[in-house]
Amino acid sequence: MPHYIYRSACELAQLIRDRQASSLDIVKEHLLRIKERNAELNAFVNVFEEDALAVAAERDRQAQQGKFLGPLHGVPVSIKEQFWIQGKRSTINAKFHKDFVAPEDAVIVDRIRKSGAVLLGHTNVPRFLLDYQVSGDLYPEGKNPYNPACTPGGSTGGGAAAVAAGFSPLELGGDLGGSIRNPSNFCGLYGMKPTENTVPLHGNIPLPQNAKTFLVHLTQAGPLARTLDDLETLWKIIVGPHQSDRNTPPIDWRAPQKKCLSEYKIAWVDGWPDHPVSKQTSGAIREFTEKLAQHGCAIENKSPEGNLHEESLDLWMGIFPYILAQGAPWFVRPLLKMDLNSKILKGLKKHRREFDKAFAMSANHYGEMLLRRSIAISRWESFFKEYDFLICPAAFGPAYPRTKIGSKLRYDGTEMIYSNYVWPFLACFNASGHPAMNFPLGLGKEGLPLGLQIVGPYWSEPALLTFAKHASQLTPGFLKPSNY
Image (cartoon, rainbow, N blue to C red; front, side, top):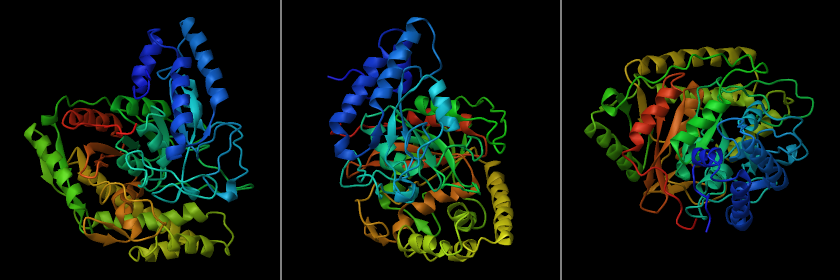
């Protein structure tokens, strides 16, 4: 009978600090669970068993001396395969990067180590991180612990499956188009994309040899966890400036002032004008907002003026190619574009104009996109002057059956383009850079997790976490898969 599986990271840290458990025993138990059950889900692609056991033993020696490195001293943590871990491969599941070995730790991986954590291993991702499923060139396909026939989401799908199945208490993920929030939603977890440019990016993705450019927008690293306390703990560890990234400013994170739900004013939508959701998803959002209202929360069904959501999706499509194709020869760019159009963006005709123009790598167009982005961010910020947070969908419905990338999806009597099941609900807030959290609501009619998204103004993470903690009292939160 396991003693430590499904205990929170904060609880495990306290057990170690109180000398009621050893890091070595905790890590051994998680490694055994991975060894026995990972083949069912393919959540981990590289387990650092020898390293983890050695570090756990060292953490125990330090604890015996009364030395505790930080809030995760002795606690096992899993890392998405995109992040550099010194001496380990980082391939993003693509043959192109199969030989890349990290020369050093990513800045945030180094911070996690210095918090005392024990790195269990790298978790599974889709090829080039470009899918809401987990399949690629090098690793076996990732599966959802609630139903292995379904996707765990992507691109942090292996990590979400690992945390939901009890293989790891805490995961470091990354989010360019929903890659933290989508797998958190499909696997019943809390997952947060922090405000853009608040977490350093150095070492967050393998780079081609002799890479000469490094444009980064839309993306941010963040935590996935079963509890909000764990989510907050990992966020506090990774956030903040570093000398390697001058774009990460020092933020005066303000302590939350509101102490109960009746002090909040919340806007909500259960879909967007051109992107409705399933009856089950809409019903779950409406039921949750009604509960908030019953507890005194000021609730209003309201979205920003104009068509800001669609404009934000336009921006994502107009900026993303610069990130993907930067430095690529002119003759390679059409191939990248063709690959996207035949797979994850197959059939998506809206927002094509800016997407097509971006692949020309025009400095004028790039500048135009950044100006339009600045204006859109200001408009979103104006909206948040009236509301503390926005509640909105995280997907059309729950996790869908694993399928060929780009296939049409069917759910709740509706057939849709593959990308429209998830992308329109998440990428808009990558385009705007706002902090956004997946918030689990329990299990739906198929036994699959349901959830919603809570979005806040820039630099509102402390308040967002506090509101989520208040609101979580109205929901079952994380519910573990029946087979795990």
